[in-house]
Image (cartoon, rainbow, N blue to C red; front, side, top):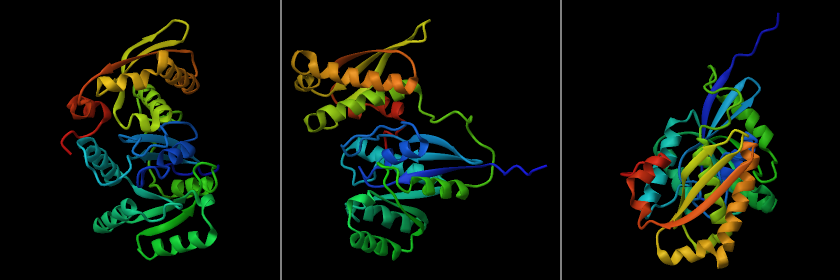
Length: 301
């Protein structure tokens, strides 16, 4: 008889400043898309779990919102969610963008971890974008903090260094039973994921034209006998003047957003998706407690 390896299971919180590649890293680690990605900072609004199996370990990654100096209520709630994810985790993985070095937001995270007396693992991302001497200088400076047990050089975009990072994280989580079924990759409900995919396309296609003024909600979800699904979504904006930006000339922009989101949803759900988008004005949706409950954020953070 051969001994079966003991199962392991644990939570890894991915922390970092906005737009350092946390969602890209989690999607790469899990192997499929579970968190939205966009060139805009602060795209991730709430905690997202990504679940993967590595040998006998179930590793549960927590993709947290980027940590930054909050200015709005939503900002405060997002930062509180990030630190909440870190406090609940078995291990913290701090992700740093090598090309940005130690900026103000990253330094604030390091200082806060020191204050909490929390050790972390370090992953330096986008190493393919910087020269070797600059990378060595950055690594040396971070090592002097005494905060990090292990350091990994990676590129979340290309996958370089990811296998070693995942292997080491899987070995580090505590022994124990798996918490999720083997085929589950996220705890995000399908409806919320569908809304997030559309929000991602809004960010990608409008970028600077509509900064953080839009959110997406499911209005109706109908399952059909042939396995397809019809999804009606509402894109909420804060001002009437923003409606034309989202719709585009002759409705061309909203059509493009819907088409791109539909194709991605069909890939994720592996079935036919009929997606219909509607644009409505809801003033100050960012100050509505109900929105925060939907996102799993603390309205009073």
